Image 1 (spheres, rainbow, N blue to C red):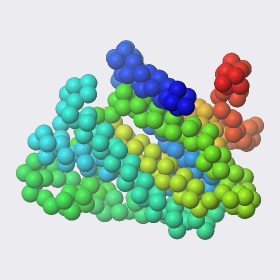
Image 2 (tube, one colour; image 1 turned 120 degrees about the horizontal axis):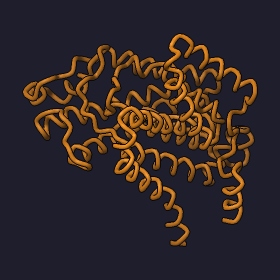
Image 3 (cartoon, rainbow, N blue to C red; image 1 turned 180 degrees about the vertical axis):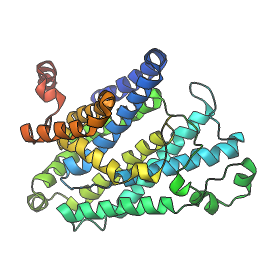
Length: 351
């Protein structure tokens, strides 16, 4: 039993090894522009795959995913920014491939994920009696509440003396307000994005292939029938919310520490939630492979159309409309890459 159990972690280890290789070999070769594009793709993959756990696996309709991303991003950013003043005397990044600053950064991302998971629990519990449009409105309202609260937060404390003299409550509410949280050290790179993408894909895939995942898919198809055969629908719907929110919080932490991005409530509002929903619907609700493909396409497409600025958004919208007309179930439907590629399908059948 130990052998098959350990072999189950091989995809995760391969993903982490690939992240190390990309950071060590390819990061310098591809340059900062394409490096940032790859990081944006990775963050969007985490967001799309995590939302797919709620919208795709259990069939609930959440459109407030950016709110969980904001909770995680601001939590991680505050820990790294104020923690750097306490530990290193300034908010400048600590150099090194894996430095003490990186350790603080990773811990802050995990803390951001936990904070977002708690928010997911708070939203998921009272929403259990709601379905469809009503649940969508609740999640949308949650995202807007988070955005307004962040806009009303205080200015970021800028000097080491101010940070040392401030109380924990003062630090927790000094998040930049409507002007945004600036000065967060840049720690996000291809290594950490790749590691968290590998963890997200591993958890999502193992969940889908497990008994809990199949029960979630049963809830999606017919919640009444699933409950009639003994599936604990309440527990699994809340679990989906908590897992999805947790990974969205980690994505927010990566986004907060990325070069060239702005941690601003306006950037993490309804439009961002809408973009994530489009990735899940375009890829195929319930398909991890589809969400990954859609996240890649919808991240690269705006950059590819940048030379046609005046036509970019109309062309982008037209392509989405045509895609929904031609293939309304999304790129993959409920299938995965191993179900449609002959070589991978044969390996899956022989396993």
